[in-house]
Length: 318
Image (cartoon, rainbow, N blue to C red; front, side, top):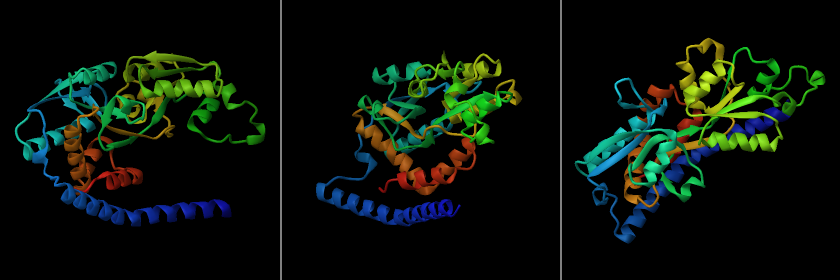
């Protein structure tokens, strides 16, 4: 117990120390930016940025609360609200720009961006090094990760493994985690990062399990509520939102565990530095002013400490 308390204290002191360093880091960044601009003759004005007078923003129709289409066919969600802020910034700082929104599915979003059909994706894409070979990302806008949905009446042993809890009576715990997961059926959305993550875990732990690929989150939730699959894995915030609208909400639940931690950002074609600059200027302004908090609360509730730190650290000085 003393060791645990000591480690926790050191962790808290580390966090406190990191928070005390943030103002110093921001001051150094501001000084560097000012010096760089003066030496190179560069201007921090958004008026020097070259943006097309016609932009197309793509948005996911099935990624609530990040991005979705309401009953009237209008784009809605957390990232859509941020994209509207980008439009406001462009029109105020640069000039009139015609912006239209195009609905996209998960499978359509990549080809639409790479073909030039859309200039910016207002979706729920995780930032990865492999994706950065093809696209460019904004500053992070959310801390995402893999979550899991199960039936409320699932076997206790299965719930224990998925929830990450320790067995109540360790000496009597005979079955290994792999044995408990054997012959289970899991569901994932086709083409998602969760699909490759789950495949890697099944291979890593040598689990004999069946993976069912679904087209969207609603199908994954329905597969669990109907008993066709044991667990549905996906982006936890989207799983939470999809589960809330299921007809059998009382029979399913989202596990209080996040398996991975992934930054989510807006996505652009690689090399479009002017658009990326405008997007990051918008985000930095929202983060520094605290305006992002109202948008966040409307879609996710009160932000936790990690999210607040992300906003504080990610907002860049002018």
